[in-house]
Image 1 (cartoon, rainbow, N blue to C red):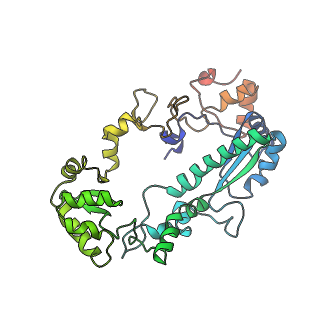
Image 2 (cartoon, rainbow, N blue to C red):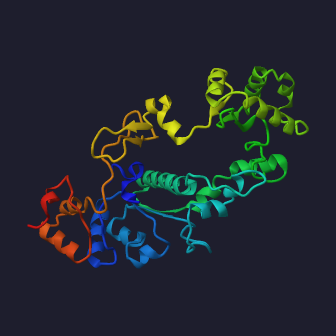
Image 3 (cartoon, one colour):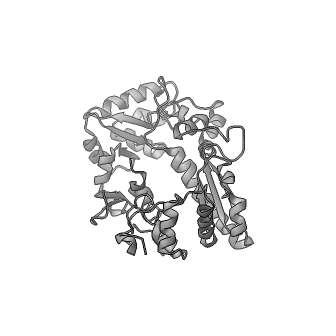
Length: 354
């Protein structure tokens, strides 16, 4: 898989290659760092220090730099040097144990929550906080982001439920995970699913009245009738297809939604209107459809401007911008300091020799 062609991650970016084990490669990085506000790195702890491109080294070049390190377990602690992936970070944080059927094994979700939320989103939060602090103090700083820390930070509701119930909830058996009929997932007649989130009493009452199950209105969290209510709702939802339930319940204001496939999501009018699903008309894009920008700003909205480039696709133009000559760039490429490809945005498309 060409990871530089994951459009939703690598669009709007330039890409260059540098051999950071070489003095010339480090020098290029330092020149880029002088002009930068933020540097993000994802090496194992200690690696950037060995390469002489750690926070202290970059700080000497640019004292105001915000230097963000994103790792699996953080820069400190007994696990800092351990290898891992998303599934491992969710495992050791307790998150994975909460996902899956009550009587089965934990289930690995198809979305990498530790990578994206624990690492990427927390990284953005940390960087923004550091940028605000820099405006007040004039100083940059090192942001240490652990994907495992990010997942542990997702546990507040479990601690709240422990306070209520005296113990941490078990998998698929808590207030917000399958225990009660009001907050559950139900199979439909066409082997699809409907999610029910009628947690507040007024939503639950509306749902019960719709199904003419008036006796259950006052029994929403009754432990003696809990299983009975779940089974009744399972049988009721099996009487119609997913689309029929969507049509029947959409106007009731009871927190019910169809469980969509990704293919369904691409077609949903709401996502199209919100520009979260966008058609690519340009021939530069491999994908016909791409994902939009989820953060909507009124004055400075985000946009999708350029497709992802191949490995080293902007090396030439970036180095030319730093003052390197065509011959020097070619020499650095021959020496293994960098790698570049023909860049359609530069005169290098026809060759980079002088």
